[in-house]
Length: 414
Ligand SMILES: *Cc1c(COP(=O)(O)O)cnc(C)c1O
Image 1 (cartoon, protein in one colour):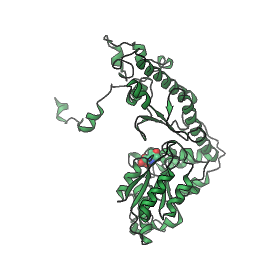
Image 2 (cartoon, rainbow, N blue to C red):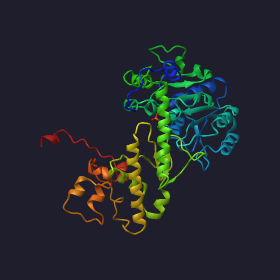
Image 3 (tube, rainbow, N blue to C red):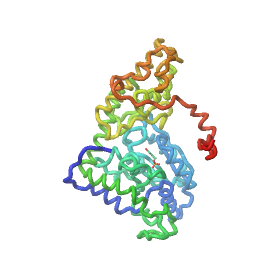
Image 4 (tube, protein in one colour):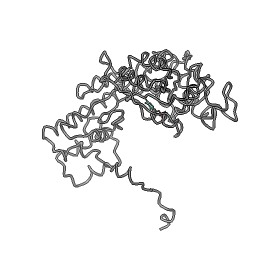
């Protein structure tokens, strides 16, 4: 979230507030898909049980489709990261009137604006299906695009992505959903608090019909305080920041996807696979090394294995972005030092990262690089340093072995 003072002479972004006021329900992807199911069923098309999902999708999309007993059919992406229109046509051809829906994210998790979004929606509609637009990436759209015109039938706003709330207070995300007029009769209702114009047969999403009263006002205040201009500026900064980082990192790493004009949307994917091949240094080594610089690693190996997905958002200052870029450039040089043989594959600052206080304060230091390189690889770290608390853990072991870390009360008595 931005911390700057905002203009008090604000004009409310009316579309958003209207959405937040008019659509009563918290979002829940499976529930929203059920509206689509009820709609198809009401038309007598009970055979529609397939949800098309592009390969770039977030895992929540196929998971939601499965939860409402839809069958997931994956649509390929082309080498630019866009939905492969030819493959979409082939899948529609193959599954015909079994196509219930397509769930698509715009701009996609590959960090590109799907130029064919309208055609994608048209093709699904022609097959009699509905289009669900995953609103997770509104950070690239607010104030500069009209999502209603892409051609979707259902969309939700992840308030925890673009509108400054925590992730639903620890539970599922929440926010308004918007549906086309034709889907209105199929939205969920509430048995205790009447929600106007809904049908109780459609079921219920959550115990509180309007969502969390403690959290939703945060988004409302954010929008009020930012105002129309501020919201637009946030989008512009998010896109500018992502492209700044992409351009700068592009000098050291290869970027996986860019749009036709060489730009990305709100995030970029740095491809670490070629480096891994050449040096043996893994994406995890790089993610852990970032901790030595005081950074929490960006998303790793999602949506593509062996990559980092970097979404700076609008809220980082240029100084902070420059520090991150410097860290990544330094790391790139360290990878080079492994490839060139200056460091061995087993003893280098990447393989051993993160370095804890315990590591560098110890009288023992048996590495081929200095303590300074280990813990203070950039100038700013000499003034201020956040120490990683622990070295690497065995992730796979941890995932496979449930370990209870709550000792019984008796153990405190000893
Ligand atoms: C974050 C994200 C999701 C997950 O949304 P939740 O509401 O947190 O479950 C889904 N799709 C995309 C594209 C995302 O970025």
